[in-house]
Amino acid sequence: MTEWECLARSALPDGAQLRLLRHVGEYAIYVDELELMTNRLHGSEDALADLACDRLSDGTAPRVLVGGLGMGFTLAAVLRRVGAEAEVVVAELSEAVVRWQEAWTGGVSGYPLRDPRVSVRIGDVAVLLEEGSQRWDAVILDVDNGPRHLSTPTNGWLYTQPGLRALKARLKPEGLLAIWSPGKDRRLTRDLRKTGFVVEVLRHDEDESALYSESGTHVLWMARHG
Image (cartoon, rainbow, N blue to C red; front, side, top):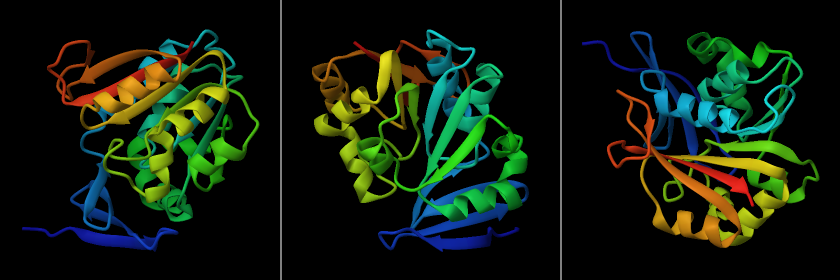
C-alpha cells in the first residue's frame, strides 16, 4: 500500500504546522493533526460559492471577498458564477498555501489564481475585515472547519457578535455573508440574526445538493445584510 507523501510544511503565525500531503493523485492539507481539506470531496465548497453568487443582486461586476484559498475550489466556483468585470479578492493566512496552489494543488481546481479577476491578500481575513474600509457584495468564509474547529485561534472573532457586526459593516446594502461548516451551530445562527442578518441555513450532502432538509451533513449559512 502506498503511503501518504508529505510534499511541504509551513508554520502558521500561531506556531501550528500546515502540511500538504499527496497519495495517488489525492491531496490533503492538515493543520497539526486536523484535516482541513482534500480534493476528493469539495461539493459543499462549490455549493457555498454557487449559492452565494446566485443570491447577488448584481452578478455581472460584483466585489467578492473569499476568506481562505485552500485548494482553490471555492474560488473557482465563484469565478464560474460571476461576470468578466467582477473583482474577487482571496484572503489567505499562509503564503505557503498560495505557493502550493501553483506548484501542486492548482491543477485539481483549474488554477483559479491565474484568472485576471483575482487578487490575493496574504494575512488574517479577520484583520482585513476589521481594519479595512472596502465594501463587498459578498464575503464567503471557508477558513475553518466550522466555528468550533478553528484553523487559527484569531478566527474565533469572526463568529462572535462583534465579528459579525464588523462583517455586516463591510457589506454593501443587500450584500451577502456565506459561511461553511461541517456541522450545525445554533449559536452562530442565533447571533447572525441578533446582528441583523436575514439568515438561511442550508444543508449539503456530497451525494446530492444543498437542501433545506436535515439530510445533509455540511451546513451553509446564507446571511443577507438586513
